[in-house]
Amino acid sequence: MKVTIGVFITNLELVKDTLAAWLQDAEADGRMKTWTAKRAAEAFWAMMGGAFFWPALFSGPMKAREADAMKKELIQIFLARYKNKD
Image 1 (tube, helix red, strand yellow):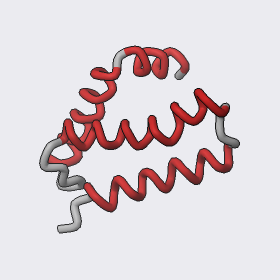
Image 2: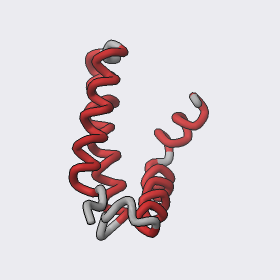
Image 3: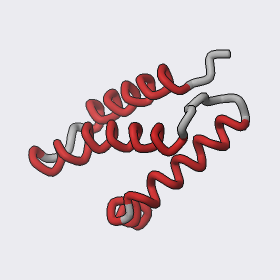
Image 4: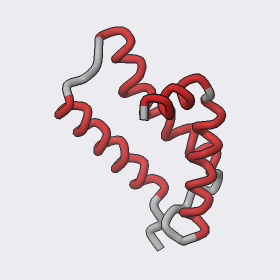
């Protein structure tokens, strides 16, 4: 897991491309409606990075319970926007 995170941190395009491909597959299955999978992937990565990476860099990591709540909140926000409601 640490290796995967290290690769993703050093190669943001890999993260965005991997997530965009997953979102395209989810859209093909009718689970998501992104209109532009790459933009949705960038939005997701920006939310996660804004909530976890930058604060941890300057203030230290969140407590596990707080991080779990934040993760769930961000996923709910993302799904509220991109989940296929048809």
